[in-house]
Image 1 (cartoon, one colour):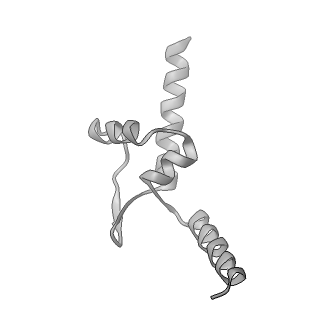
Image 2: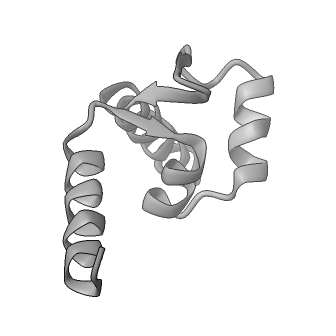
Image 3: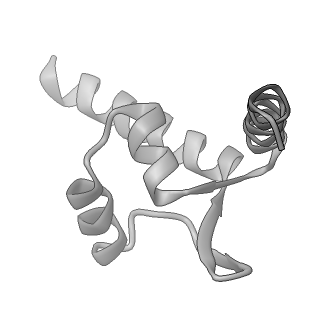
Length: 81
């Protein structure tokens, strides 16, 4: 596989990941700027939606994560008023 084929493969993998309805804890951290430690604390406090296994990876539905984070941000804004 030459360099061009490899970069095309990486691009396709990223696009597939973006189109997927699933998101991992690491992707949540990178996308939303929340530390892994905070996300794990949220898991322990049952503030995260249910997760599922896809292959060997634990993942969440993107829509559910967005809802949880939106509610959390609103609650923080209201508490700060």
